[in-house]
Image (cartoon, rainbow over all chains, first blue to last red; front, side):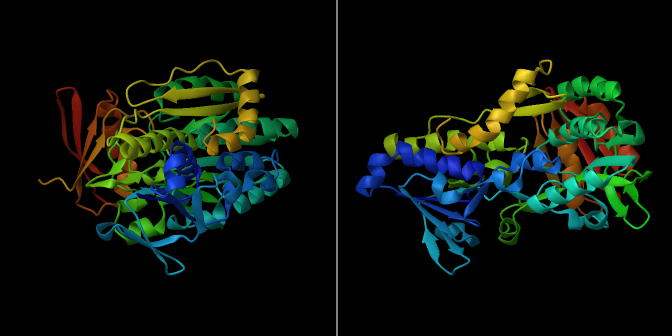
Length: 377
Length: 76
């Protein structure tokens, strides 16, 4: 049995390690072979980018060597997939090699695409890559006061990030003693300040207390970077001195090029996590088209289900679990406090008041992630 | 009127039905009709509100067995 894991982010790494541990005897006897193909020899802890943007983590703290995270019985290659040939159970890689499989896991993730919005790359700051997060920090350090606009593209990775960045900005400017010189305003695509109703209900009075203004039903159309004007699909215009944007995302180019899914999102069964019409193709993390948050947390819980099911198929001939839509997101709430949102397909989150211990837990998790991604936590 | 695409946004809290619709409309062609399925009671209000504000067209709103079927035509 040849299992091929494509992608070495949170989901792919947890699945490969989980499988390697569950199928130790089978891999030693040669009955099972686990292969991972990735685009990078380094693994990034992506939630750390928000801390980099505020000078609270150094970029090198976000990385580990991918090989150091993997169980030794995983056959690991830095050789990204160039073409999926699902009808032949094969993939072709950048190096020209062809890999055959019996079961494939597609966990290629997503990428920000600010260039798809006119003027956005020139006019806005981001924190979804290392370089953009470092640049955003430098812009924040230089900022002397004025209008800060924070706007949100659709779809985006980490749906909690928009509110977290507002709380972080409030703290940052207070600590620098210039909060009274800064007008902080938040622009959100739907009719309330967060897509999760209970998060919106909690965050609105927090924004009010902190003097954070907001406008809803605002979808980014274009940016006039020269004149510093942000324009919405809904017809409104906003002047700004500093623009921070949660950028629109897409799946990876190879997914769109091979017509596996519009926007790079693969049509996926929401419970089995198999690609629609392909029982031996599993899709996890950001790569799915599921109506689920694109976060490391969703990727983690999906990965556990997929790994257990693939191992069960090998051991007893059938899967044993469904994915129930579980997501657990920390929410950094400012003032060194945090809370969390935990929900699944049927049960909405019930937010608790932010606390310092939850903030310390989040800071601890920033390190514990490396245990988590090894499949140990 | 034929539906170009059906989005199944039932039983989801995040990103939610309206975010799913906004996301899809970016890639749709003018004239496409999308049918959004939602179990969120707020969808019957917030989706027509956004559609009107942005300048698309609501072409159907009905609830069948607890599921909202909201049809939207991309107008621009």
